[in-house]
Image (cartoon, rainbow, N blue to C red; front, side):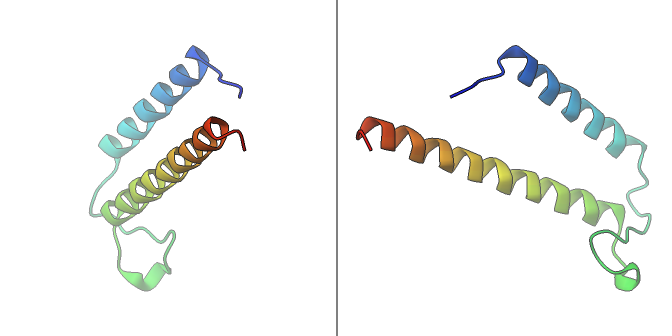
Length: 77
């Protein structure tokens, strides 16, 4: 399995810093139309929560796949 090493960690750190900067600059009460209809009445706070939930879900799925892969290698499958 390929591991990008320190370059991947650096990239993830840069993305985290960019997300933190974007959140600090954003007006949490401003309307946000994505991923909902414009008239849903949701805010940037809702958008940030949705993005974070999606990232957590994706990280959990990747972790599960890694566990399955490790188990299949251990069993010789």
